[in-house]
Image 1 (cartoon, helix red, strand yellow):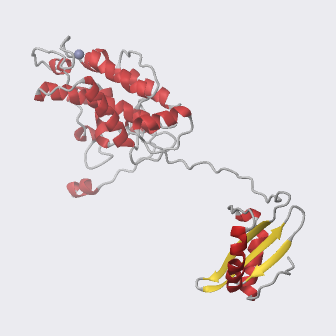
Image 2: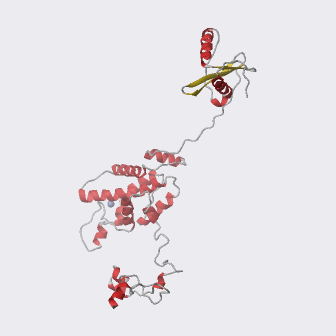
Image 3: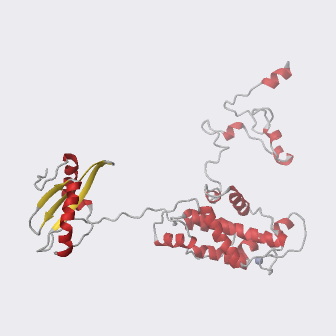
Length: 347
Ligand SMILES: [Zn+2]
């Protein structure tokens, strides 16, 4: 009976001063000490009432409302592939297996930096001090018109990237620059270390630029400064911003003295549909309106053509619709009425 009850019992957390967070079976089916990976020495020293983890009825003692590290937003950025985020997370936690960190675990072996052959390989040397790594950090920041200054620890690099990134319109490219450079250093080290393959600094840097472009190729950029435009050009990124609309002043001009100007337009009420043409003839201070349907227009044109060719000086130019409303009205009027006239009144 007792086993049946204990198997089905449920603890309700109240004031919870008398419930031990680590050792009591309040969470079910086992105490937290049995579910955790903590060693016995640590567990035996732990004794806290559940109430210590409850604040105003909420589990705020267990939550971490703010980011625990300043670089978390940088590493877990939505535009970064998980593989690079994970590499960055391991890097900032010094969890990449460089020679010195392996030796700390008691495995002894000779060490040499594969990037420069001038030093033993330590985590700090590989990512901060090595002349090849320094050159790559410098060239990447130079790409963004920033000056690379030596950093003592890798977290400082993350801080530098976070601070400088605030000023960039194209933040994603700057972010991609950090992780592309980091990945290139680590990849080159592993290629030399395990495969015996070696690339020149210029080839490695071209790979970094290619990686930045690849990471940003699906993003749309709207440059807002000359620096943004230069960066887009350097990385051959597509500028998706719309060209600014240009306002063009349009107005009708009187013809020169002794000249006559004909503004004309055509119209069709559907296709096929009844069509019409219209025009207004004006000298430098007068006007004459005409409204024509197409067959009359063709007749008039044939009649005038030899006169235009042989007798007077003439020229044809394009006119914007905004400066041609009367001819437009006359063309529509001719199409609707089906009549031709040289005596038309305007509305
Ligand atoms: Zn080195």
